[in-house]
Length: 336
Image (cartoon, rainbow, N blue to C red; front, side, top):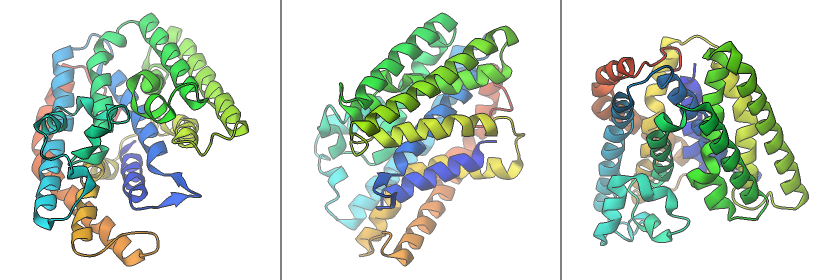
């Protein structure tokens, strides 16, 4: 039962982008980490057994792309109508950046090539690039447990190196697949523990315990080294350490219709909250913790836009997504 969790995570991301934090720590980063755990769980459910890879990729495309392109068009429209100098559109004159925004996949490399951040109609879309990269690899990667285990160990090592300062923490500890694949695979392992063969469940459970303990040890080391103020060291650790047991607990609950309804708003809210922010800024209102009325207006507008995107660009595809999930041997209890 993940719908309410998804909506809460999307709200945390939206709030983080108007300055809401906990003692200066970013709320959106641990939310994204939990999103990655959920994605791993759902993908493992869809690829359980002998999946049809093309059906899986088609379902994921229908899941991500129509709402994304609708939100991107909305963002561009708000920018054009407002006439404001929004930094995320400063590179709008470069056709290559439009192509990158349309392709989505390169967007999580903005920490290495900052020019990518100068044209992003949907600024959080970098995490969609990260997810798409995982989706492209998942059928091949999850088909062989040994392959998945090796990739998990290598990625966890890269993530730990980034946390400890041996690699750039923002890029290799948060945005690039090489340092985050272990998070997706931890979500997949949760599914395998709960729904896979009993003979393999003990090994994946041990891998989860070992990874959780390893993240805790690295987090303690980074705190001792004074690195918790480094982006986004503390937030990634907290997201994993709290998110893994939370997802494991919620996965055992039965689906509810109201929970599914909340899930329909989560992804569109994740996509459109910047458009809501820009619209209010264009009207001379700046949402912030110090301006509660403007903050409430921001959340209401973002939720209203999310509902509209769901009706226009998400709901019409639900029937086809269900058919494709059936073709890809989806597990109806996973939720997405």
